[in-house]
Image (cartoon, rainbow, N blue to C red; front, side, top):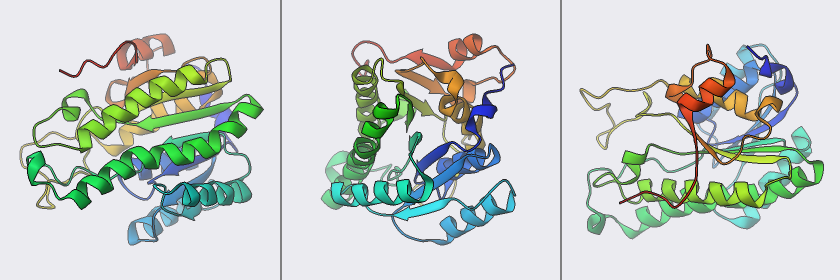
Length: 270
């Protein structure tokens, strides 16, 4: 098996929404790989402090850098980008994970509050764009970069009572395909990674895990995100990878056949 972890030592990585859930799992995976990690969050929190301490306790390097800001605002995103570059150096990997979870599940669309709709759409869509816009040109100039957008399963995108969460992820996937084509030949890749099921950190609208549901562990993201951030993923772009189907025992071409697919053609939603 190829040792793609070698190229991650010292690599500069930014994970948005890295204080909890999938973001936390990916931050810790990068820290174990001895990457230089930055976390973007909207504010300090107990979850953020706990993640920073756990990363430090791993003993593989310094605590991740933290940049606080509202990525829905282009000016704030620019300030976050500048701070991260100042603290970490040129950013080589961006993982767009931050988003508003589907806490509105269970409500038909006409009962959703406009503020809730606006916050989710702006966070999940605008928030994944503005920081990417800031960090992409330097990646192009250096001829290397990795952009990974975190998504969800196809059934979630169109599930009853799951608007606007599902549609925001459909937008992110369509944008990822366009970005990958825009960046073709630049050395910068754009891919989509999804956990492949409800994650064990998720809760229903009551704040408690839903009885009888099967969950995947957040740690399922660790191996595929490391490979996507590595040198050995060069040339693989415009892909959608299901983390729960990623099998490290298989050769890479078999792994990609099993867990990945090209984001080709028009979206098949209806």
